[in-house]
Length: 331
Image 1 (cartoon, rainbow, N blue to C red):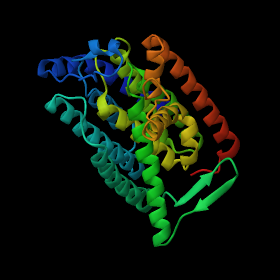
Image 2: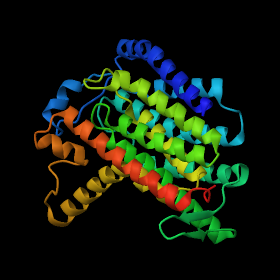
Image 3: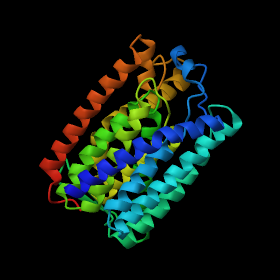
Image 4: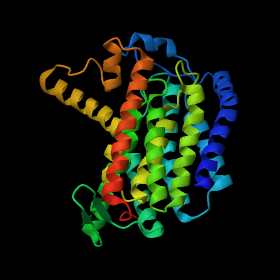
C-alpha cells in the first residue's frame, strides 16, 4: 500500500512541477487546440489553448514508476501498451496542429493502428505475463475458455481488440469538457487500484495509483477554465491504462461498469449516428451526451461535476460487484 501511495504522490508532484513549464513551451510553439464551429458557442473561446497535455501526464507516470515500480514483465508490458496507444494519440494531435483543423487521423487509420497495438498486447500478455485466454463472467459465476488452439487465440485477440479499442475510444469521446475525462478516469482507476491490490497484483496497483496521481496533477491545470488540454495523447493513454488493468486482473467484463460513464458517452454517439442515418433526426442536441446538456443550458462546471458523481456511482457499483463475484478468483 505504501508503494501505491508513494507512486501517486510522486506522479502528482512531477506532473504539477513540470506542467507550468510545459504549458509555456506549448504556448511558445503555438501548439493550440482547434475548436469545432458546430459545437457549443461557449467553446469558441477555448481555441488556441495548448493541447497535447497528455505528454506531461505520461512524464509524471514514468517518473513515479522509475522511483517506485519494480522492473518486471507486467510493468513493462503495461507501459509498452500505453506507449503505443498514446503514440497513436500523439500522432493524431500533431495532425490536427500541423493541418490547423480539428480533424486528425481518420477513424479507419486509428482502428488499424489500435489493432496492431492489440496484437502486441495479445502476444505480450499471453506469452510473457501469463494472462490466460479465459474470460471470467462475474454476474453468472462462469468462465469462457477461448484457448488453446488457433480459433481460441483468434477469439481472444478479437476480445482484446474490443476491450482496448473500445476503452480508449470511449475515454477519447468523453474528453470534451474541462476536466471531465480526466476526473472520470481518475475515479475509475482508483477503483482498479483497489481491485489490483486485493488481487495481490501490486505492480498493476502501483501503475494505476501512479496514473491517478498524474491525472490529479494534470487537473491542476485542466480544471475549468483549462490552461491546457490533454488531447488524444492523454485520453488514449488513460484508456490504455484502464484496459491494461482490466486485462491483467481478468475483470474485462466488469470494466463497462467500473467505467460506466465512458460507456454512456460512447453509446450516446452510436445512438445519435444510427438514428440520424436511419431517420434523419437527432436523439440528442449534440453527441457525445455531455454536449447535449450544455445545449440544454447547463453550465460546463455543472455538467462536469454531475458526470463525476455519476462515474463515482458506476465505479462504486463495479467494485461492489467485483468484491461479491470475483474477489480471490480473478488473476
